[in-house]
Length: 187
Image (cartoon, rainbow, N blue to C red; front, side):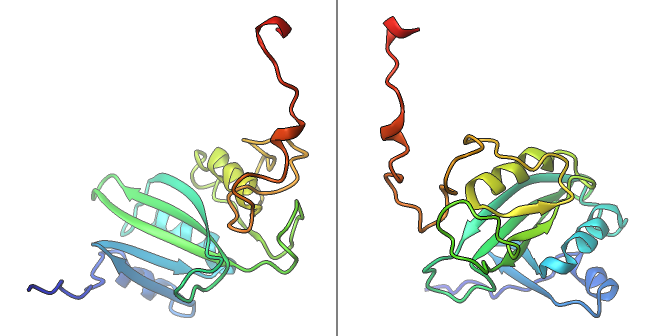
């Protein structure tokens, strides 16, 4: 039986990143050959700006922005919710996954603008983040500070919850039952 080699965390950007942000709390991870970086929410925008513009990083392409709900997750997480950014450098053809975690300060049922569920927007660095950040807001309730158009994108504005949270019922909270049925004769 062969054992997998332990992670080496030898991504080329980690050393200059650590030197640049020596006073910040940065945690690096590796899973299946992909390097991850966990950044505190207060430091997120500064670190992301460096990752975008520093020649030794040059992550010029934001591939995705998504959210994660760690409710009842078996391993300990730095927060209940995470915002995950997948960055690519087209000059080096490599990938870096950046994650920041936040914890709610209010009950998570219903649509509540929890002041603790806020991270800085990266739309000034990667304009393509605009719709992706709106989707994370709509589905998880995490707001993005300095976002140019922070409103729902997949559900209607008065929608009473955030459906990708793990405490949201699988069958919904009765939203479907209030729809008017439309058939061919009603159009």
